[in-house]
Amino acid sequence: MSPHLWFHSEYSYNPTEHSVSVPIRILVPLQPPLTVKALLDTGAAISCFDRALCPVLGIDDIRQGRDIPIRLANNEQLTGYVHQIDIEFFGHRMTIPAVFCPDFPEATENLLGMEGFFEQIVVAFQHRNRKIFATI
Image (cartoon, rainbow, N blue to C red):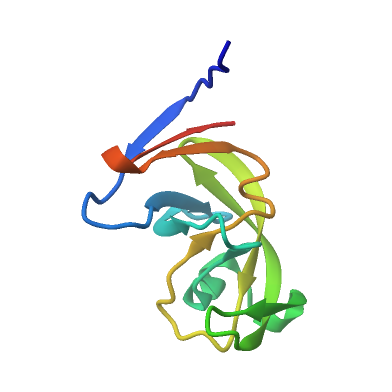
C-alpha cells in the first residue's frame, strides 16, 4: 500500500524556469501586508531576505539580530543577522527566522529555507508540470 498525501494549496510557477519563486505576504504591524516573491530553496539552511525590507519591518539596525555565518555558493563566507518575521504562505501565517546581510546588495532575491519555514509545512514539487503543492 502506498501512502497518500493531501495538500491544501496548489501553485503553478514559471514554465520556463528551473527554480520555484512564490508570492508570500510579509505581515507588518499597523500596515497592510507586503507581497513579495521568494524562492523555495530546500538547499538553504535558513531563510534570507533582501535587506531593503528592513525599514518596512521596523528593523533599524540589521546587526541587532543574532549573527550567523553565511556561506555562499562560491564558498565566500559573510555574516548575516537573524530576525524573526511574520509571513503568510498560501493563507497560512507563520513566524520564521530570516537572515538579513548588510553585505548583500539591495534587491537580492528573497529565499525560504529549511529552518523555521520548511519545518512548519509540507511541500511537494511536480516540476514536470511546474506545480507545487503545500499543506500545514
